[in-house]
Image 1 (spheres, helix red, strand yellow):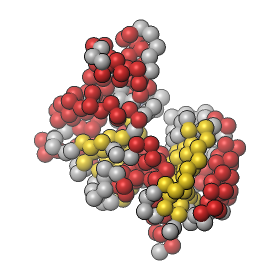
Image 2: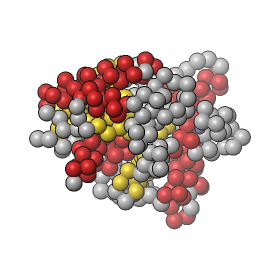
Image 3: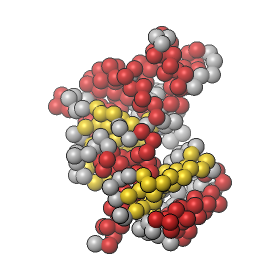
Image 4: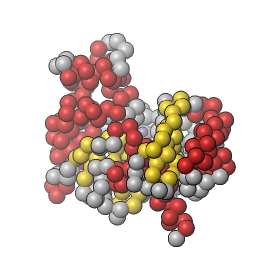
Length: 303
Ligand SMILES: [Zn+2]
């Protein structure tokens, strides 16, 4: 069997997995993400990956990371946090040097979209958009069966479609971005203001499930925004399906009706019946997508 390493660097946790060519996780290691340490953290990830890679004779490494990386150089871009300590860190080179393996890096939500294509709700489709809703809202676009990168490699930032130009300011410089309404952070912020106390997003979803009216109103606002965003994406890309994943989508049944209503009122007539699917990949999408992406990219390079 051919193996690759799939690395998922999230805001909180990092996972390093050995993935086989059929898309199975053979072994996985976890460590806390310490991106704020800058280069030393990524060197440590590389060293840990090297040990796992050697054990399985891995052929390549794929890395999906929070934040933006330049496609040509594999180096972190400023993105939303120009002062962050990881900006300018040569992620791809550090991991490649530590492991001695061909290394392919990309944004975690784009890598997740690739996992949907290979193993998830996008299997069998050639054109779709996948959204990952957790702390924030990220996305990946698949067109003609390929991941869309754009000129710099940062295509797919669906969280920064502005749905309300008079909405709150976003760190990206715009106002009223989708991510400010449809993400765990947004739900917690909107509910904390309404309830006049600090609440977490899981708490809001649980309150809503129990029928709390204020929590339900927050989710209604989230769903309306999500539907509008999905409508804009449908109008732009004419996808076969739209896929929703990420930690907070376990609560989608609470959002579905309002999301669909809003989606259908913003998508063009011919696009209103596009199915909105839930991702079956749970937390494994990042490492699986990264591992399979690395194997596929390696094959392209070697061809
Ligand atoms: Zn924004």
